[in-house]
Image (cartoon, rainbow, N blue to C red; front, top):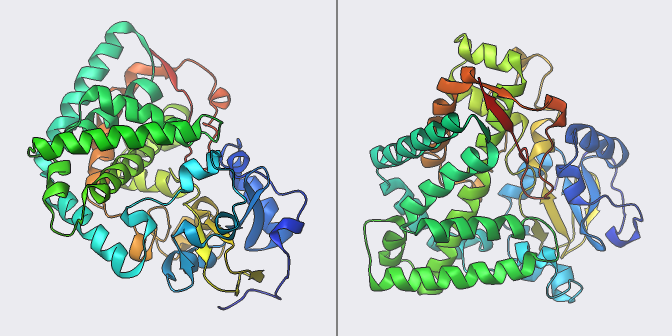
Amino acid sequence: MSLTGAVRVVALEEVADRPLLADLAGAPDPARQYEALRSRWGALAPVDLEPGVPAWLALGHAEVAAVLRNEALFTRDSRRWRYEAERKVAWRSPTRAVLAQRDSAHDRDGAEHRRLRTPLADALDAAEEKRVVRTVDVACTSVLDRLAARGSADMVAEYAVDVPVRVLADLLGMTLADARRLHQLTVTQRSGTADAYEASTEAEDLLAGFVAARRAEPSDDLTSALLAHPAHANDLEVMGAVGLVFATAHDAEIAWIATALQRLLADPGFAARLHGGRISLDDALDEVARDAPPLPHLRPRYALADCELGGQAIAAGDAVVPAVAAANADRAVRAADPWEQVDARFHLTWGTGAHACPAHRTAPLITRTVVGHFLARVADMELAVAPEDVVPVRSAWVRHPRELPVRFV
């Protein structure tokens, strides 16, 4: 692969002061942390997925794009990870809860990936937009009316989380109770705590029971469409597809919505540009996604052979984490003057290559509707804390404000 500068030969295990990936994503100013790593290491820096479990963090736009696009050299299959093959990751570790191999398009490449992605793409393309919008409208209106009547709220837990979970329950044909439990388990899986592995196991059990019930009584929902698709060989693959839809949509929607609400409540300049019509809601949401990606780090890819990337020698079996948050801010593509930008939509927030997000219509539609309802009422709200007191969740894999307490005025 093409390199930037001279090749450095550094074994991951030899670096004594590797930062934790969760500390980077949860830092008050992650851009500064990425820049410090870039200054020291260049486009590829050593980090820890959890203490004692190292990986490379790809920081440059070109390097992240290369990792995402080159399936021949970087695979999604965690069984090719050196630390997995050598059994250096504890069986019940938080890292395993997130990275364990599953029967889904996320964890396959090549022809198998295309086979498993086809049902997802077909089901999402067939989703009726009017039904989606109607479901979101009803949820937003009822939730906001209830919160306004009460006079105070946490707009993360009670709006940015509650509405997407309701919508996912409707789309998948899941009970609201099961969807809320799956939300709790997904959050625990991403937390990096000792409870992550148990949460992963319970989520698998919940999905198995749900898919079996839908097999017995199909309906007009996305899960039934996945069950009926001829590309799926068995119900384990359907479980993988449903779990992938829920987890990915859950993380991306909640984080994208919550971060947009934070900008509207805490950044008067951003709110003024949107209210004044200088930018559209779609452009505002794209700006939020570019500047603060909902998924700051994508799941690792694993090197299939010794190679060179960003001036660093990568060993076969090394894990490489694409840091889209750092790549989006790379000065090679991000100009100080927005009018000099290479491309207004250059960013890698939604991935690129064969594994790019398939929900290119549904996800923005949901986010636009949820934030649009909030925008219509934001004049009646104010943050109940100082903007600098809003802190992010602590997770290596998702970034959004932990809470947004507001008063209705």
